[in-house]
Length: 199
Ligand code: GLN
Figure 1: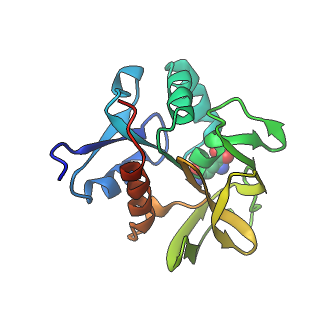
Figure 2: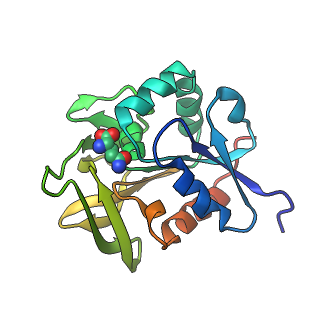
């Protein structure tokens, strides 16, 4: 049995970070930690969630608060990371066809705001991994338009990948934290428990 709780960092510069924290609080043995400054990102952080929001704003704040380099290095070194929506964009290697200079560790290309005006935001349900019936909320979501070699598609909706995994990185175009279903977070916590920590 684990005596100390597992610290999960939630990037808290902008966007829907509170919602992720609330989901994490429901899991016993998990201690969510808001990451706003490099000092918050200590070596006991065993996993990192990058929330939805506005990826351009978050990218600027990451650079302004000197968080970009340490986060990128940690994810490169194998820290389990889970990005939702804008978080997926920040993790992607290519954005709108151009090489990305954000965290850029996930070998996919994304197209921002891919669903057009009429479908800006919508709710549906779909599969994830081997299970079905996941409620999915999309808000000005990106589409994954290219999948790199080591990337596994965990969910497709209307022929478009909406959840992908590459080793220690999980990303969804939808917002599981805005629904009552916590199975995607549970999956991520399973990744965290299965991957050795940094320290
Ligand atoms: N449209 C936003 C972006 O491009 C992402 C939206 C979201 O995170 N819900 O950054």
